[in-house]
Length: 192
Image (cartoon, rainbow, N blue to C red):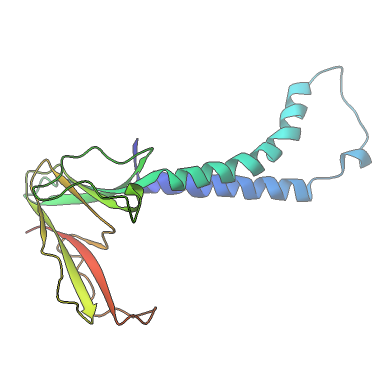
């Protein structure tokens, strides 16, 4: 199932927020033994049962659900016709597997010997235009920067990450080397 990035964030952070609310409920609720028991013969028994057990279930199930949502989701960038003679791209999350795409000429499904297939970002070109993935290197160069990947209409490709999307979102001129390796790179999905 492919969901927009905003919906994914609402589900992920919503599950974590529900777990936090359940913890607060347990911490702040009054002691049931200190309150007098006043109820009318079996009226509201289901409500009391749900209120007694639901926070505990939420404290356990919501973090597990958020973890599974994170582990079973894959980044997807879908390029469609923007209607103005140019493509437009949107980020999505594929939940429960990798997207079924036809790979661009010269590209294959990622080899999962180093990274799992879910660690990649998949580009699905559903527009009538060619798009390309370019890599910008910073700092030391090893002299083997990858050639741009051309993605024809109706095909796709996978990269470890897509940092910048579109002609108006260029990679920065410089980046900070936070791990002192002396080099870094940014990947750009671009079209003419």
